[in-house]
Each structure stands twice: as C-alpha cells, then as structure tokens.
Amino acid sequence: MAINTEVKFLLDNILNSICEYLHVPRRRNHIIRIHTKKLELLGEISFPLNIKNWHSIIDQKNEDLITIIDHIAVNQSLSNISQTTLESFITHLKCESQNWGVSVNNVKIIKDNVHFYFKKPIAFCKTIHDCLSMGQSYGAIEQGPKVLFHIFNEEQYCDNSAEMTLTHLRLITLKKVAQKLTEFKLNPLQDSNNIEMKLTTKRNSDTDILCGNVLNENGKKDSTTSAEELIRKRSADMRLMAEHKYGLRVKSSELWKEYFEKLGVASVTIELLQNKPHKNVKVSLNDLSSVNKGASFIFYNCARLSTLFKEFEKRVNDGIYPQLTSLHNVDFSLLNQPEEWELLYVYIMQYPFMIRSCIQDIDKGIVNPHYLVSFLSNMCSVFSVYYRRIRILVAPKQHLIPTLNARIYLLRSLENVFHKSLELLNIDPIKEM
Image (cartoon, rainbow, N blue to C red; front, side):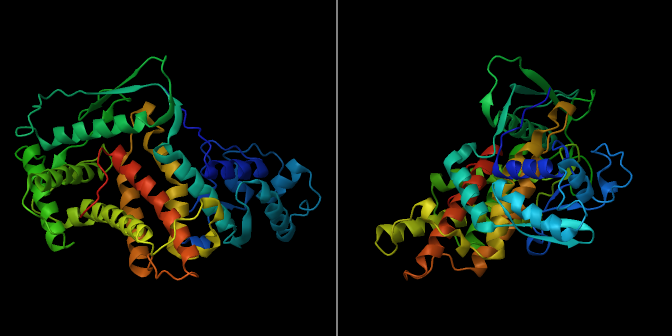
C-alpha cells in the first residue's frame, strides 16, 4: 500500500524544475538538499558539483564527465555551458529559473556545492496566496485508501483512564494522530479497500507499527502511574504556568477548569509523541522541564498569535489602522528580516513536505508524528525570537502600514499552518495562555 502524496505545491514545482534542468530523477532524490538552517549563508537549495555524488541516481557511462554541469551540457547540447565554465552555467541557470515559479536571484559555489538563493518577494507572494486560499487543506496529500488502525497487544489493557497504563495511553494517542494524518487528503479514495494497520508494543510483523513503552524517572516501564493521574497533573502544571509564568488571570469557574483539562490532555499528547514511536519515552510526573520546553512553549506562542490578531482587528475596527489591503497589492519586498524568510521558507513553504514525511512509509509500519511535534517546537522558537525582536503592531503612520500589511499576511499563513498542525495532533487552537 502506498499513499499518493503528489500534490504540486510551490516547492514541488521548483524541485521538479531543478531536476528537469539537471536531467536527474525527482522521486526520493536526497542529493538535492532543501535547507532549513543558515539560509542567509547557504541559500535555500544546494547540490554537489562532483558527478561522483550523482552516480546512485543517474546512469552515467561517460568517464569524461567530471561535474554535474558536464552532465547538463551533454544532455541539453548547450554550447554556452559545454566548456564547463561556472560563469556560463550560473548565467544560464538564472535565465532558466525564470520559468520555475520562483526564480533564482543568486548562485554561489561553496565547498564544491552549488547553492541557490531565491528571489524572496515572489516566493512570499505565491506561498502566502497558496496557504491562505487552500486554508486548512494546505499541505494535504493528494489521495489514498482509507487506513484503519487497530491496537493489538498480548497484554490486557483497561479503557478506564483511572486504571489505564501510560503505555496504553501512548498507544491510543499514537493511533488517533496516525488516523488524522492518513485522513489529511484532498481526494480520499471512496471505492478502494480499507487498509488495516496494527499498533503494538510487541511487533509480530514487519508492517506492524511498534509503540515503545512509557518509562518512569528510573528508566523502568511505568506500571503504577495511571493515564488519569498524568493528565490531572499536567492540567495543574498548565494552570500554574499560565498564572505565574505567563501572567494569565485565571478565575475559578467550570469553563476555566474545562480549559485546563483540555490543555492537560494536549500537553500529554505532545509529551508522549515527542520521540520516535518505536522508542521508549521517559515521563517524570514532577519534572516540569520537558513541559516548559515542549507543550507550554507551543501553546503560549499559539495564544500569542491569537492575541496579536485580536489587537490588530480591534485597531482596524477603531479606525486606528486601515483595512488590510488586498494580497495582490502587498509589497513583500518589505519583509527583509531573517526570521520572516525562515518562517516562510522553512515552516510554511516546507510544511507539505513535513506532512508527507510523517506517513510516506506507513506501508512499512513507519509513522512519524514526532516530526510534527518537532516542527511545531522549532517553528515556535523562530517565531518567539521574531516576536520579541520586531514590533509588529507599529504606530499608525502611513509609511509603516505597507510593512504591517505584509507581516499580517505572513503571520496569518503561519497561524493557518499552526492550527492545522495542532488539529492533526487532536489539539484545539490555544487562544489564551
């Protein structure tokens, strides 16, 4: 069973165009690197020059070829790069890239690798348009059969949370998130046969999805702490942090009680899924360090975005700010901060790739919800730095409004990705923290 993930998002089109230009296959091509760090230094995409690095994916029998540029020249029969000069190659590549959806602004050779630097305003405009126009469908895979997950184990588990073990809770949590991820499709196949997948702590088949145990602080399988006890403790932790760390004024009411119970469940979900599913995960009931670094940090930044947009809308309604201009009239060249490009390129533009990586090998019994948890945590780290460093809701001066408009559109797209990621983890968007 294979899930068809071939929805053509912007970065897909760019990579397909690059592969076509290089005359190399696209599928499972790990030689072309998509960068996530040091973008200002390394650019967005790179690949090696030496032809030896490409031998695993191209059938190259011509021993005279030394670089991938030689390979391009032979396949395209282009005289202007047939002499294997880097200058003519770079000139030709920049020209060709104008048909790639986002053109290349600069090309550098760093340590025998070719590095691309995109024209950012075009990438901002197209990616934000795609993200906002598709809404909660942005990042979905194309199609695939319905996958049904079943928990199977030789041990007897109790469905009562007061008696349920933490390992069983992890199995249930993994099942729900795996189900969500496989259902995130643009075009589900209605007439196909269902695929049955087993989740277990003791793998009996190569296609079983193995779930590691939950260990206590001593490194032993936790058989005493109940699911209810952990959720109740994390609910109390969330309330404590909201009150003392984030300054939220909490009143005694059933609504607040229900709110923090949901946060407790959400916190446990992130805590149990932060490791690879087949790896054991250690949970210490009274250790708040993992909660501080993980769930509460994610929730706080989600609430931060919500608060920012509430204040923006209030200022618009009060006549302090003008109405948000049309997306097509936004000048995205004004977004020149490094975090702005990182949020766009790494966390919005690459979001569909991350979703695919969670389930692309599910037919082999591999599902990777920890990618989603890591994605959220890393995205929040970048956003948090950006939010503290840059004043987004600026004074209502005419010359500052165009930059404000561009930033609001960027952060609306970020929120769309944020909320969908939480939904895939069965977590409601956090409005206050």
